[in-house]
Image (cartoon, rainbow, N blue to C red; front, side, top):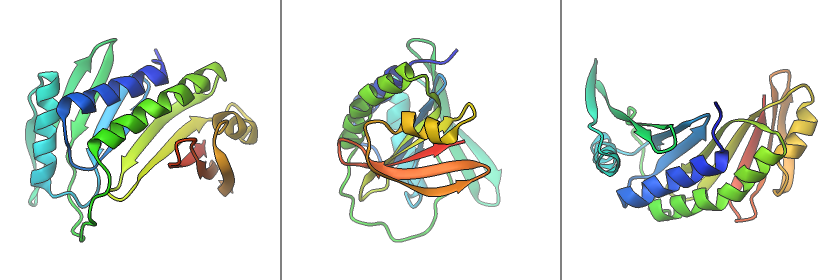
Length: 194
């Protein structure tokens, strides 16, 4: 059963509101799932603190798993209202200098809410959405929409990208096509058609 994309976006935004300030993260919604990971470069200890805040907001208990060779994960999953499923986890960090953060968890939640009308419109256009990802890369918020084509990738792109501006195709091949543009709220968006 596919859940309404707009409802998933609202659920994810409410979860971020409940958890409070978090490290820069990536929120992916699709199917019945909300998946949260962190921006590469966020130290593991900071990721864990954010996982703990998200777990507290849902009543879940995170699990630490040692993967060997000094690698580990810290994850939890939880059932959300409306038969939705949440998966949150850390990933190995990439050692790189971190920019001065100009984004916030609050801004990410606001972006998710701003995307809800677009999600509703995608449902009415019969676009088969695989995943929508809101990414906080510390200096900006971006969005990627992954959709499946039923045979005409160009038409699927036209339907999925309705409401965006400045759309240009940046990749086209047998595996599908990608196009970049801007959302009405100003964030960049990449629409990928498979």
